Image (cartoon, protein in one colour):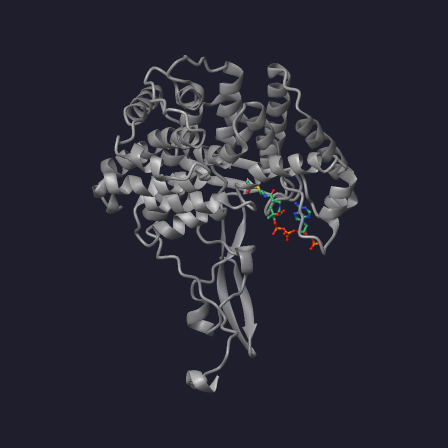
Length: 428
Ligand code: ACO
């Protein structure tokens, strides 16, 4: 007999099915809760709420496990290319050689953005944050491809939108950087791989060729893979919920980019470096800043520490820490902010406050360090995260559509005033 859960309300017992995932995770299926009991559940931050069943990413926060479509993140980061992982996430299986060749070819053929988009960049203030620019540019793509506004087209038409997005996001990201530093745009080069082409658009100048450093390209490949999906996080849930209204894929991804921007989510990697710079400017007294992070009356938190689901360690942080050490060593980087990061990591890992709360350095702590070593400006860090997360967002959107999920629309418990009569302005 299948397992059930019983809930007692006002002396009446109601029974609900328990569903079990392929990794034996359990959930009480409360789809019929309100209909049968007239009650809803309250779960701020959705800490206990499953919004969907999903076959994309498996994450076990207690044991530090992360797998895409069943493949351990450690193996993918070590052996795969980012485009292979993108294919895996979006289409469910690792591509065969011919499939990968076609996928790469299609993406390479769509890297250019419409020339008219260049004019948009001119209108942004020089200090425009590249995440704001990227989110606007991605939603603007829908106006250049009006047929994409119907998300229920044929599989081929949806694939074309997916390939366009994967192809154009690095171009738009690099353009937003070039615009911020007021350098001329560099066009994509079809002979280069996905990562090398992005580095070229970021760092080449019309006057001078740029040769991507293989150490840098390999570290970036790893970083993008590590960021590629993370099940129902804030931005992925945003993409799914926006998409559930049948808004088009460009609009849904743009919303995901905005969600990622926040310092409690993807924006943490920029916040880490800004925090380290601030501590250094303040004299570098780490004990003082650690004490501030522990003080309940001080809003300061150690950026890059803690995670909603990983309460033992973040498996991505383990891989990325090694990549950070390799990059720093191979590039011979000597940066006081990076020394400070290493000291902070050591102190926090030995402090009972952080140990008791399961607060460990997360992926953003080390990714900020690598990006800094790669000469990527801190305002671009979250953009880099968005480049990595794009295949995951697409896979989540596609799955939501294939599952025919209903529009996302949570409920609430109202705690405001009871009914009262309108008071004319002179009597208030
Ligand atoms: N520094 C100091 N204290 C912290 C930190 C931190 N970075 N993070 C959590 N805490 C403390 C809280 O004050 C709380 O203490 P209490 O139990 O005494 O009240 C306890 O640890 C639990 O914290 P919550 O905020 O309830 O944990 P939650 O799971 O909701 O938050 C989050 C997770 C948002 C990541 C949090 O740890 C944080 O703000 N970290 C800093 C920002 C950051 O690095 N974000 C990147 C996340 S990774 C990603 O998005 C890819």
